[in-house]
Amino acid sequence: MDPFFLWLESTSLSVWTRESTSVFAFPAILSAHAIGMGLAAGINAALALHLLGVGPGIPVRELRRFIPFMWIGFWLNAVSGVVLLISYPTKALTNPVFYLKLSLIACAMWIFFVIDRRVLRDPASEISEPFGTRTLAIGSLICWAGAITSGRLLAYTYSRLLVDW
Amino acid sequence: MVNFQIWLVSTLARATPIREFMHTKWGWPAAESLHFIGLSLLVGTISVFDLRLLGLAKRVPIAALHRLVPWGLVGYGITAGTGALFLMAEPDQYVYNPAFHLKVLFMLVAGLNASAFYLTSYRRTTAPGASADAPPAARIIAAASLFLWISVIIAGRLLTFYRPWPCGPAGPGFLAQCLPGYVR
Image (cartoon, each protein chain N blue to C red):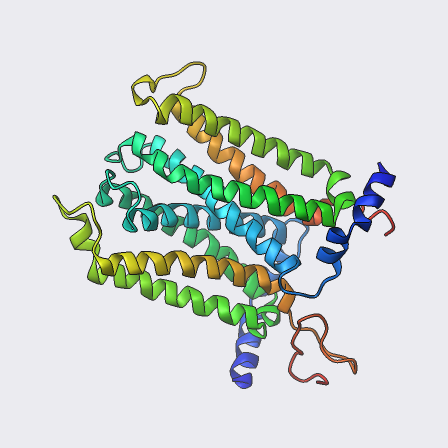
C-alpha cells in the first residue's frame, strides 16, 4: 500500500492541507468536521432520546422534518473526512482504530435507516422485528458515542504519520 | 490583564491531582471523547429546538419539543466539566490563547441569549394552546443560538492552532502567541 499512500500524500490537496498555514486549510476542515459531528450524531441522539421516552407529546412522524439537517451534518463530515484522509492517508489507513470508527458509523447509519423506515414513516408498526424500538435507540446512542470516541483516539493510536516519517 | 492571566494560571495550576490524572495515558483522550460526546448531545438537541422556533416542523408543539432541552443541558454539563479538566491540567495553553478568549465570549453570549429566551418567549411559546408560530423575538434568539454554538465549536477547534509557546529569538510559531516572560 505504501506506493499508493505516497502518491496520495504528494497530491496538491494533501500537501496544501498539511502544510498551509491558512486558517482555511486544516483548522477550517477540522471545524467543519466537528460541526457535522454535532449535527449528525446530535440529531440522531435527539431522535433516540425521543424513542426512549423523552418528549412523549412529540408526533414521531413529524421528527422526519429534522432529518435533512442530520444529512447536512453527515455529508459535511463525509467530505471533510475524505479531505482529512487525503492529507494523512498513512496515518489513518494503517490504524485499526480508523476501521473501527468507520464500522461504528456504518452501524449507526444502518440503525438510522431502520428507525426511519420502521418507526418514523410508519409509527403504527413500532414493535418491529428483529429489534424493538428501545434496542434500536440504545444501539444508536452506543454506536455514535463509540464512533466519536474512536475518532478522538485516532490522534493517539496511530503508528505511522506519513510514508516517509 | 496580564497580571490577571498570571494569577489565573497559577490558581488553576494548584489542581495537582487533576493535572496528574489528565497526564496519565488515558486521562486526556477520555476527557476529549466525553467533551465531543457532550458537544453532540448539546448541539443536536438545541439545534432541533432552534429549528422548530424558526418554523420547521410546525406540527410539533414547542412545549413537547422543549423536553429535549434538559438533555442539551446534560450535554453542556459534560462538555463544561471536561473542559474544566483541560483548563486545570494545562492552564497556560488556554488562558493566553486568543481562540479560548473568543470561545468563552461566545459561550457567555450563548448563555445570555438562552436566558433571553426564557425571559421573553418561553411562556408564550409553551403555554397550552400557544400558536404554532414562534414570535419574532424567539426566532431571532433561535437564529442567534445556532450561530453562537457553531462559533463556540469553531473557536474550540482553533484552540490547537493558537496555542501559546515560549518564544525563542525566532518569535512566535504558527499562529501562536508568546507566553509572558519570554522573548517577544
